[in-house]
Image (cartoon, rainbow, N blue to C red):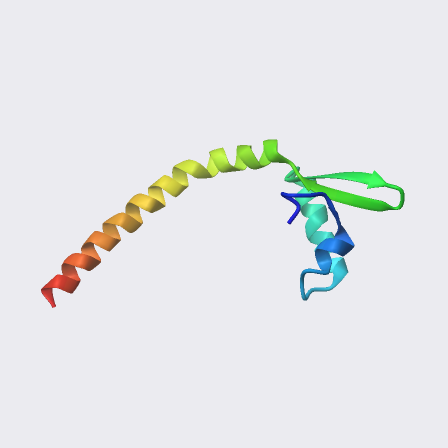
Length: 86
């Protein structure tokens, strides 16, 4: 949700069936990890995505994604062979 626009914790929490303090805690953790940035506007804090950090995470995960894609492709091939034998 915050990928398209900055939002307050309350606006984010309104989209979930979870207590606002729980959402606030998750936002705090994401901000500490620098996955979210935040900006104080008056009494409200608006959270927004940190695209640079998200890119860093995506780059880190990419080799693992490729590994799992290869493993699932091998499994799919084996399953197709097994299915044609039965």
